[in-house]
Structures are given as C-alpha cells and as structure tokens.
View (spheres, rainbow, N blue to C red):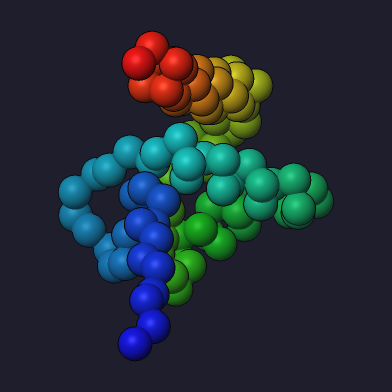
Length: 103
C-alpha cells in the first residue's frame, strides 16, 4: 500500500456560496488580492471586486471602497506578513536550539 501525504489547506475566508452574514477577509486573502492586482495593473477596481465575488472556487466578498483602503495600507499589511513569518521562524529555531543543544 502507498502512503498519501495530506496537506492542510491555507486558512481563508473564501465563501463557497453567498451568505447573509458578514465575514472579514484574512491576511492570506488580501495577499491573494494584491497578487491579482499586480498581475492586472490596468483592470478597474470595480472589475477586480466583481472577479473575486464571482470566483467559482470560493468568493472573496468586499467592495471597491474596501479594496481602495486596503491598497493604501498594502505596505503595512505586507510588513505584518513578513514579521509574522519571521516570528514563526524565530520560535522554531528557539525550540530546535532548546531541544537538541540543551540535553
């Protein structure tokens, strides 16, 4: 028998269908939006909003005003992502140092 590796999916607030309840997008969701913005620099913000609203694999629901504000805060959000990953790596290194070198 062969072993299959199961990877857990990245956290997202993508919605499979429309909901009546309002949900905030995760940092990962906004990084996805920023990548799309970079790949489509001439696309209007309203068209970007409609693109994410109508995605078959999970809609990300936000409006043009929110997108505009998030684009203004993009540098801050990207720095937060960088710092978050740096903290995770630092914590992992501390655990390795403690576990293997303090025996």
